[in-house]
Amino acid sequence: MTEWETDLQQGLRVGVGIITAILLVDGGLIAWVAGRPVSFWTFLVGLWVLFSLGLVALMGYWLNGLLHSVYALDRNALTIVWGENRHVVPTPLIERVLLGSELQGKVRFRGVRWPGYWVGSGRIEGIGPTVFYATTPPREQIFIVAQGVAYGISPDDVEGFLHTLQTRLQMGPTQRVEPTSEGPAFLEWGFWRDRLGLALLAGAALGVLALFGFLSARFPTLPRLLPLHFDATGAPDRLGPRQQIFFIPVIGLVVLLVNGGLGGLLYRRERVAAYLLWGGAGLTQILLWAAVVGILRAL
Image 1 (spheres, one colour):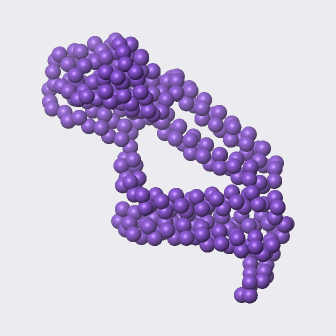
Image 2 (cartoon, one colour):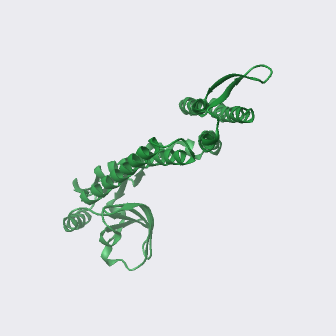
């Protein structure tokens, strides 16, 4: 078996540059917020930082796929490996091989791309459905067409790859290989198709974020001391600094994380128990919203 590497230098440099830029922006925003009073703007900055850190993690995952990209070729199959993605194309099923420079039709691409990184799916006029795992634009890729599906790849030595592929095809296979396509294991979890579970978790998460945002917007107008506890008659019996009102959404966040994690652990064996935990997290957010409304009405 012969392995052909990709030219990952450009994709790696640009990807690392994007991550660095995001982190620099985050650092600047955090420094700006640190010197300002709590407001809705500080909430929006915090929300952006949270989102951007998720984007950085996703970028890291994509770059890991780039670092572990290779095309393996023998007489039986072409194997495309890109991180946790693996496609096996048996050589007897290969119908034709095209250079990107030979494409006449329009290329439609859906996926992730930046200079040096093209991973996704799409369609090419005159060819059909296409899967892209390459570090060059489509016009510079090699397209392997098998069973009506094209695979866009970019080995670093195009001429050497084409010569080896032609030789392997002429020699014929030594054994039968089944075509396979494998992706990341976590994408196969049934949870992603469970609308109820997704709705319960999304509702609880939105409840937490909305409460943080609401309190941040109201914070500049709050008195320095707030009634934080009430006796049996409904009269306030404990005052505290207004900053302590953020303990309420923090409690909601902790409940969401704990119930969400426990529900995830139980999901495959006791789905109803997972629903109860996730629903309990949502109910907790409703109760915390009620507590905040009660405190603000008492002002």
